[in-house]
Length: 105
Image 1 (cartoon, rainbow, N blue to C red):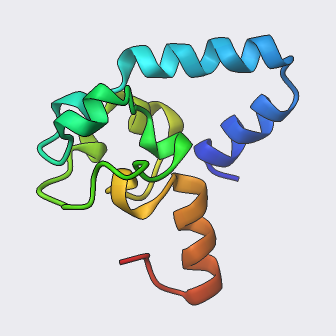
Image 2 (image 1 turned 90 degrees about the horizontal axis):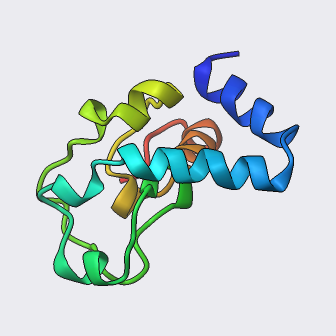
């Protein structure tokens, strides 16, 4: 079991208010707003933490560049994938890779 799987398992055993506090902590260190792919629509919609919440909701469609690998959330959570704002959350990308044997494009 890797770091991401351990963190997800730990969160499953937390009380809902503790999960929410953990998510808020991650949001506070999220670097999505500094990414070249992040845009005004995402900012206005207060979209953050795509690695956890999944793709941008109708705001980000162009992959300009990705700073996910340098994000403290990615390091803390042991994330393997990138471009979460357009390709989906870590969990979704891991599933896709497992089912199809390739990364989502």
